[in-house]
Length: 280
Length: 314
Image 1 (cartoon, rainbow over the protein chains, first blue to last red):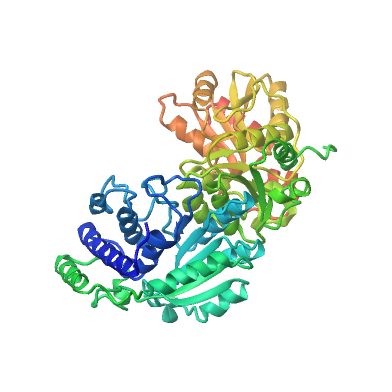
Image 2: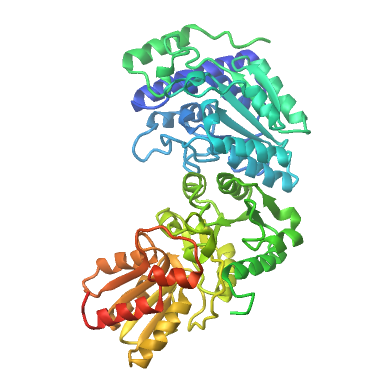
């Protein structure tokens, strides 16, 4: 089915609400990144991705490789909202014997394509997968979702080299450029700028967008799909903690959940605002 | 040995040519060491299924994981000093935790690597790989066994580490076929058991000759399947002989001998298990025979240890 941008914005708001409830219930986990990248997840799973939630092993599906596994509350909430499993399961996040592991575990849940947590590994997996799919002349696309902070891992740059060498244009990287990591702002911990120029110099196409503009996200993903001369990285400028005022742009919300009063405040804010992240 | 087809790396490389012909799903990957790990012929014969990642062992492991997700069978080879040493965290999360069908090959293992010195002599890789859930760990002892182990590894579903070495080693005769989870008997015997793995059997055979001359009946076992381990054969040897000597070109901590000692420690058999190998040291430059002598991975070390066990002085 096709959604209007207003539908997608409403979906994003519901997923953000799920994220807050899940994290409050879990008592640990990562808030800011999950809220910040929600609009990208919604655009993929409700607009651009070729997938079938009722048939998660469909061979023709596009593959989403989540590299920064700590933001998995947004992955789980999106998969549940898309129909991969009942949303009631979201309440088990990080609980004993739950399929919703603290960091995603391949095979534990339908729709989870890879295990991740230690940063910097996802792009290698995505590149190997894209290589194999391209070798077989299949049309499946591979989307790798990454944080900005994990670009401090050397393995990431090995992957950029590899994907350029073999022109893996079936691979699109979506970078959550939210400027924060555990210990503070990326530019203070270990500067990444110019991230755009660095990746361009590795022979990739690089697009930069507002990561909350649903139209811009969709257009960039479409452009990457049609461009076959290089793999594409989309730098998505986002606000960490998006939608919850007291979390926005605060590095201290990278790795902690809301307590009960904070969660109630967050849900109130999300209820009141349908968001400014859509335009027809 | 004058035969230039007598190292385990040659057995691996020759097996890969045969495998490449019969299994279109098999890919070979290297990190700038194609000839050394004996994949040059695979690259020449099957260039479309050969992947060069450059000097990047983490990438070697990660790309292999991705290829496995695309239903390929990647066989990724580098030196054991670089893989798993440089890439263990990637192997752990991207391959072992995901239980992907990736085959990793650690070449130039041990002191047998020789003149390159300590940096290139991996003495820790068995320990690093056998602690990873889902992984099978194999180390063939001669050219033919390396060919068979490579074939079996590719047919086996699941992540596997194959440890091979650079040097020529003697061809061995076994009483049983190669199989994952099984030891192979080189010689039946009733007084003492020697269990070796990898490139050490020239020393084991030399020690055996001397012990036989002294009238000692030696059981010689080849532990080419380090994980899973052939527990039944270890327990039988412990019951039927005075004690067990293990020998390997690896640290004694965490290696094949440790795995066997762990089995025996959980029994009431009370039999000694003396481990020969590198004793918490790094290697150095030299030729394999002089290094094996200095680090007591030698026929002399075996015969001395056998005498201690038989005299119950341990």
